Amino acid sequence: MVFNTGAALLDAIVLAVVSMDVEGTYGYKITQDVRQVIEISESTLYPVLRRLLKDGCLEVYDMEYGGRNRRYYKITEAGSAQLNLYISEWQIYAAKISKIFTGRKKHEQN
Amino acid sequence: MNRTEFMNRLERLLWDIPENERKEALQYYNDYFDDAGPENETRVIKELGSPAQVAKTIREGMSENGEYTECGYEDARFRDRQNVSADYRDIDAEKPSGQPHTGPNLWKLVSILLLCLLLFPLLVPLCLILIAVPVAVLIGIVGIVIAAGIIAVVFPLVGVILTAVAFYNLFVTPAIGITLGGIGLVFLSVGILIFLLTIWIFKTLFPLCIRGAISVIRFPLRKAGIVK
Image (cartoon, rainbow over all chains, first blue to last red; front, top):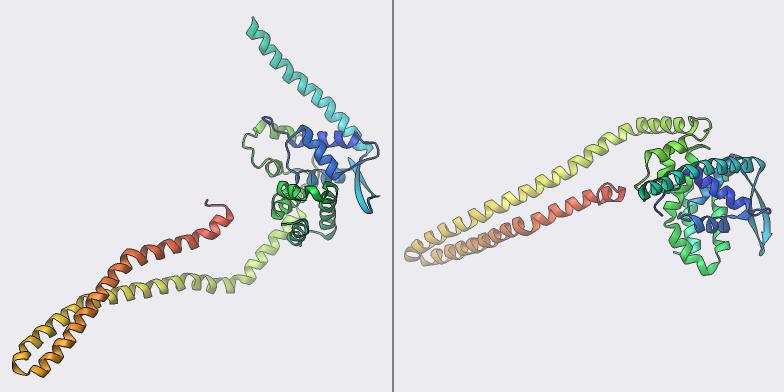
């Protein structure tokens, strides 16, 4: 990908991915889902999840799956609020960028 | 490397972080392998890179203590992308951050200082030895080379003189003449051999030694990633 994903955007993407599952989701699935949209290495997500957990944006619980305990990540209320903030910020940001891009196009046509 | 080896190595690399942090990280990667399934084991290991890299990411995630050390955090994840613009970092900088980390870093600094102080009496002679031994070896080699050079010149000379004396004696007392002649020729041949050996040392062995020494010095630098 040409564009970099900053720390804030990565946080937002991870929060959005986790929030899609009401019951919560697990590390491997989060990584795979995030990798659908941005290029990151598999080891990148652990520090991000750990920090979001520490900041209270996510919570974890263990549930049995296939004879073992699997750790599930779930978005908290604080996390949802943070995600909403990110989304509105992103919309403003994306709109500005798009405006410049399309504005340039019109300029060329004239 | 298989999964068990990978996890064992990762555990060993994380020996010095708090136990709960280590447990969390190891559980995460154990889960990760479990969820990826045995059929994806090799792919996951390949994608994760080395256990050292994973350990480094975990450490970097911890060192920020809940907030970013902007560039460090960015670089850790996008190490191979050089086109990070300063503007993007500024966006991250706007994120609210917690308390600055003073505790662990201060302790680290103090313990490093203390260690240096304690090791000082040991370090000085060690450094001296490290300098003295190569110097001594070098002087020894130079001495041997000089000696060989002298022998290479003197022996043939002695040989020639002895042969000349022997040639003269051959007509006076043939027995002494033949003996001296034999000794002279031995000197001459040994001298020529050493002469050739000296040339060989200069031509082959010397550059080889220097090249070897350079590669020995470069080895730790290359490991540290300073030199390619």
